[in-house]
Each structure stands twice: as structure tokens, then as C-alpha cells.
Image 1 (cartoon, rainbow, N blue to C red):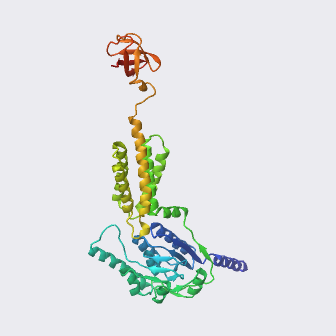
Image 2: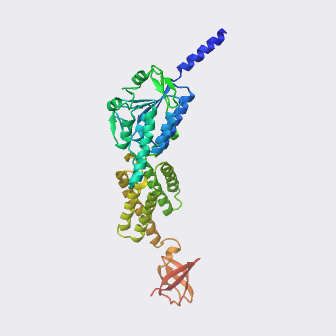
Image 3: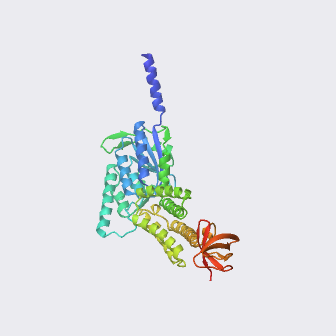
Length: 421
């Protein structure tokens, strides 16, 4: 009995030594990889029986589909979720505001802001009815989230309908958040003992003061994919991949450009598949390379080349139809990438076409067109002196000794010649 008591005490101490608060940092746009990371962290918090999951949030916003998925995971989580907008100078705008309001405990660091959650669709004009539908849907979503957490529904809705933003003090005064804290330890002390209103209607008391905090990191796969989700990087990979494939097609057998180009394009397409991509823009990018090739072939003094560069710039700008500027290709990126790639592609194609047009000057084929002198009469066979050598030759027309001849062809070790005059 005594041994069992000791073992139970050891297990209890081991359990208490485990991290009671799991912390993750989301410092990026809200996209499918953010959704996957938060979902995995919630599952880990539940598996380890953590007292809370702390999400340190800093985001300009992101995709509404990913936001809805994250909010659903937070509101149905069995582990309490604390969303903390930090560090100072950070923001949780647009999609980030929905995540803040969905938390069991919403907190902000001094010098932060949140809000500006009006839905936006870029790249095209929406008719008034569709715009109203989109706005009403987002507003209803916000009302549901705020009401379930006991927050100020009217003010939260104004962030959607009127794009209002709030400092940490304004958010606290208007009951959009629960606490302002300078750092994580002070945040945990401030929320300790707070009774939480759970999504299923039950209540729970938060006990996190002084508890150890363990950071939960992204996997290598998630870090790589999160980096690829930058539209500027996705466009750069696609453009460089296209240039490498272009070089491989013009220089068959080089291999390396083909391998690098294929990998780059596949990585870019993977990212674009997760982003709100306009595939018509890909047609503009392909048209750009076609115009580069035509410029090299027809030498239009830059007209087709400039047209290709313009196609590539517009294709880049329209490529990702993101709801926030951070989820679109910047004009600077589009221009800085498109102009050099256009010039390099035209240069490579020009070299290939010039090489194909130049007459072969080596080997037997290099003999064709050379001028020589008949050393014997050719009736039709005989000897000719060509290119510093004496050759057996066959003439298509009778040739007298000493007459100038032109090489018309090569058959084995015999030259086919004709009078040069």
C-alpha cells in the first residue's frame, strides 16, 4: 500500500511538472497553413491535458475560409484558448479580429490594435447585391462569435460594417477584449481564477498563474509551406522556373535548367493552389514567354519584347486575388522580376536562332559552298583542290583542268562539285 502511495505521488508530481500552458506564435497571414498549425496545437493541448492554449497573434489578416475554420476549432476546443495580440506595435486586423473575438480570453499588449474586419474582394467590381450579401454574412458571423463569448456585439459588428479599428485601451473599454498585459507572465496572473463561458454553455475556472509555459513550434513542413504562401515568392518561383524551362528547351540536354525549372514551377503551383489564384493570369505569364521567343525570331526592335514584359507584369499583379495587400504580388516585385527575365529570355532565344541560321563551318558539312580548283578534267570524276586538300570529286557538268568549282555536296570521301562561274 505504501509503495502504491509513493508511485501515485511520483506520477502526480510528474504530471504537475508537465507544461500546463501550451504557447504558439502566429506571426503571419491567415491561410491554410495557419489553420493547420493552430489545429495541431489544439490537438496537442488536449492530448497533454494542458490548462490552456495561448496563441500569441500578430497578423494583417487573411483568407475568410481559413479564418472560419480556425474560429470553429477555437470555439469547439475542450481546452481554453487565450489569444494575445503581442508584442507592442503588433496588430490583429481583419481576419485576426475574428480570431481575437473567438477566444475564451482575449488579450492585447500595450501599443497594439485590432479591428478593420470589413470583407474585401480585390481585382473586380462586385454588384451591390453581392457586396451586401458578403458584408451581411461576415457581420452575422461576427455577431455569433461575439455573443457566444459575452462581448460587445454592436461594437464588434461595427468593425465589420464600418471597418473600425481599436487600440488596446479602446478595445478594453468597449468590452471587445478581457485584459491588457505587458507580457505572458502578467497575462497569466491577470486571467487566473477567471470563470470562462464555454461554447457548449458550461463554465470553467482558469488556473494558469505561475504555471510553466511550453512553446509549441511549427514543423519543418509547415514552416516551408508558410514561406511559400507569400504570393511574391510564389510568382518569383514560377517566373524563374519558366525561364529555366525556356533555357532547357532551347539547349536540349543541359538537364540542370530543366530539373530546377520543374521543381520551381511545382512549388509555385502548390502555393498558388492554396491561395486565391486567378488562373487567367497564368495565361498572361505563358503569353509573355511566347512574345519573348517571337521577339528574338522576328526582331521587331523591342515591340514584342516590351509586350511580353507588360504581359508578365500584369500577369503577376492579377495572379493572386488576395483580400489584403500582403496577399497580393507587389508592383515592385512584378517589375523587378519581369524586366530582367524578359531580357534574358530574348537574349537566350536570339543566341539559339543565330546559331541555327549560321552555316556550319566544320566537318564535311563545312565543305559545302567552298570554292576550289580542278586539278584534272572532271568527266565526270577527277581531282579538285579544296580547302588546302586534294579531293576526289564528281562533277555534275564537264569541268576542264584549272577551272574554279564550287562544292555542292559530300558523299563519303567524294565531293559533288559544279562550275563556280
